[in-house]
Image (cartoon, rainbow, N blue to C red; front, side, top):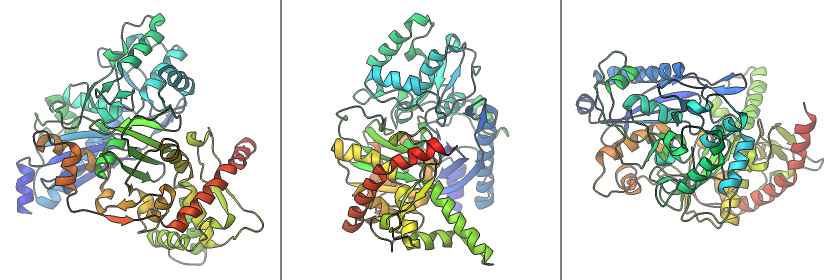
Length: 531
């Protein structure tokens, strides 16, 4: 304790803050990269005039709230006042649209990743660039505003993301990590910068509009992990800690997105490694050895924080429907006067799924609370269906809902692995699906047909990941890569729980996904007729 108190007071720590969709979390780590204190603040997006957004006042209220909670945790645990850290990093939800004029005034409310209002722009840019541009990306939002003829466009001086905005206000520097930047506009992994060809194509596309800016001029500077990205200014220190005790001059690493921090937190930045996050939404990412042979609208192309190309299968829906069914079982039990522990209930039902038939006994379900771009749905309807001769029992019922939670993701991964021949040695799993030991892990191994590893530290999350990136910037050796730093200094000796795919599970999932694909017509009918 005395050693940690001394480390805190002398700044031998690194601090990461990540703004997730429902929580802002701050994590302080020591020189051995272990979390020693944390603080958080809960928040929610708002739907205003048809746009999902967060007010910037709420951004700063949440940042200060999470940092204040961290300070209190430090005080309570160690009797120390937090006045400085060795390095600082900011992370947030990727993508979206934040634009400012020359005076720094926000021009339109923040348009988050959740908005699906850029379909025309995303389609036209994908065709123009011959590179997949998802609706969530900043460039899709910008071009949709062009197509809409929005009046704020001539006054844009800077376009950024949430993480980039906060970093700018803390340091005065318009900089961004390459992983986060790759969710704004395509990045050329050979140069680690935005694709020049595509920048020029965009400028030619909008030339007739007569804007005073070129695209490159309003985008942030792109930096790789380990590069210095500025220092905390006096104004920035007061924004984060209004008490005035936080010292200026703290170095900041390049701000990163939640995909990049997830890669770092699971030691998945080397080629042929991957990670899967399975919670309310889900995504699977594989670090690629080479460019894909063709453009796939189902696959997002982003990068690791040190600039390696990543293929991502992102799904809007994962465990929400599964959680809803577990909630129904909870209500049933409570009506019989039973007190229900949710962790025990989830564990019991998840383990029951392991007793089911490999292909779920002919049961079929879809977990589409919202649209699912991977399978071509703009809206969704949660759905469960069975044939008269299906084996309808609890084990198969739970199994089908676990398996369908990964159905859209499997569709995307089939493109990467089967069509593109992408190689992956193992997948690291994190998120709510993996809380019951051995269950979610076993299903993901069957879905991907690759070994799945779950680490104890994977639960630390993105705030820990950006703290690690801050520590890497501060402590890395000459020429030491991010992958080597993580392997040798952060995850050394931590192998995690590794599970190989079970042949019967793999065969069963292959049968299930065939039924799933054929049954999408049922889901389509539900969307069209259930209004």
